Length: 278
Length: 278
Image 1 (cartoon, rainbow over the protein chains, first blue to last red):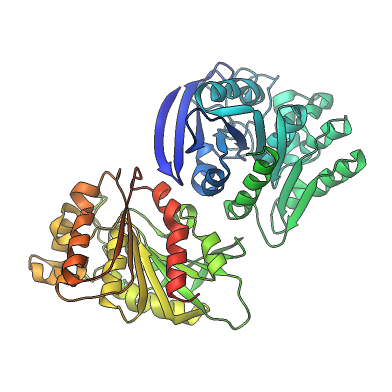
Image 2 (cartoon, rainbow over the protein chains, first blue to last red):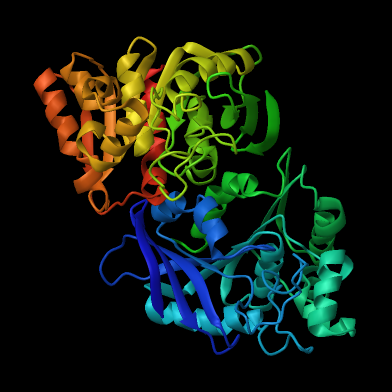
């Protein structure tokens, strides 16, 4: 693991690091904020998965999470959204597929399956790297994300409910199997057999009996993607049908941008911290 | 005035606007955050002047001021740092002169004097535009800024102590006449006669009898520019000699970046708000 940069901020250290990933076969970059803490202390960790077109940098610069993480003593990890590099196949003119759009799946189709392994990268490889290199208590993990990353947080959290105590999301894609962004990405990464998509679809996972006691979702009512791509109501319906007591809030007038995310970030950090007994 | 964008954020509206400036002879862009407020209410305003290479966008995206401005009911205005456009003379390979480096002066030298009129732009033209288009109480104004913009805040605030109730700065250039950034910029914008520089130098203004009761400065000790360009101690010495009770704080381990600014931004907003009786 190499240190790209470290800056003191909000009574802690905002770092950016890179490493050679065995899962993606590429160099991967991620950011970690570590609040000041007592020598030898282990802190809970909140994972943040970013949306389409983003890298670790967007939330690191615009997310406004550091004050709340410092207050609550929570480590914040922000991975990239896809493999990168000249060797990685891409769909150059498509912002919603290929680089910047890994959709947190392990691709099974050519030519994507060699590098596009963001599920295993997040769930296993980066998780191990974080555990080895930062003062984290891996018994206390929460996960959140935005848009495509909200989809990532919900699906990774639901599949690993024993590992992630709390799941939240900002404007998530809740049912990728049923909306254009998701049908395109899952179809090309995973193939035509839609049964293979279900473990990458929060609503399908819940239909297939995944459960979680701590889910918080914020969605802006002025979000241009709400009607066609996000369809928050599907998650509410799936939770209702499954008896899951999720908190799903529509936030009046907010859109899909970091102006929205940053507004509710401190509240999400505090909500996770409470559940992680930070 | 044209609206470039408006986004709901932190219980207010973050706008970006443009207008045709008579002072600079160019189109100018700026951002304004307006917290929600009672119908007909007039809010205090905090001006933020940005540093070298920046536009309005840097602080708007990375400054983390909105939560505090919403809490205290303060309007936040972020202008650009220079005129822009193909007609504006520039020093293309120099980050510290020309576009992005207006130094908040009215240039007197060719070819800069036609467009580089950032002093009059901020003090008069944009001030009038803000007063006419936003719910501001112009009797309650504070000013702050970063680096070159900290220089701008200190000099504009000191020259207009009757208009600006409170002045703060993050890592300001406090004595441009005596450091390389300032000697270069003031020399080229204003000419060789150093007596003309003094109204654009916070320490010289204080030596020449400018006074202000409310000055707050934060400076990181790990700032790469501290020793050569910023020289905070000169401001402390000038204030001491003049009997000005300024608060000048050295912040251990912080650098020159927005990771530093954002850390102390909420405190600066609160400090101004208290003095503006927000």
